[in-house]
Image (cartoon, rainbow, N blue to C red; front, side, top):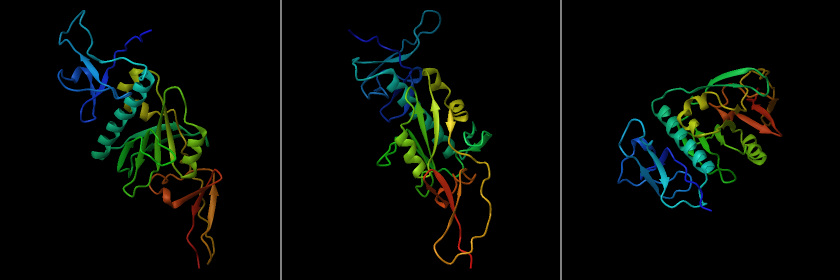
Length: 243
């Protein structure tokens, strides 16, 4: 039985940019963000009652593409474009979330000192949906986009072991594609606690550097993640040797 064709609002142009159907032009090549097969632009140019909304449709509809894959990939690409534009203009993105550790409400500019963003960047063992990185190449945080399935436990464990904070954003429909900023500002979850939990106690030592444990994350973690160390789910701050 033939699948019923869906009306897709966004497609990829030949430069790999996300284009809305109403801004697309006939005669140009467009592909589906989900399955990478050819799209057909259906746009009459007419407006008013009875006119069809501009949209993309698959040239040959097959089982290789699902609405889930289209929605997931399109949200990722639009988010990357949005974040990169903010980074290029040196603009902040202040997010709000309720901390699962201290139960307080936190607010933070997640783009402070972030130099770039990538979609599906390979970390060998893992490939997060969206990766935020510093100029040094260090990855302090990733964004996982959830439509139906949350990140695997193994993935979350990998991020914890590498001191990478995870922002999770749940999406439900194609309406979310037009609300990227609001979905980022109010993420579903963010496993970062910025409540101060580190006491400045001198450690007298002439041997190996020592660490002090804490269940919280310092508010400068995204700026300097290499300063900290994680072991068995707990976080440690490296102290200088005192003579």
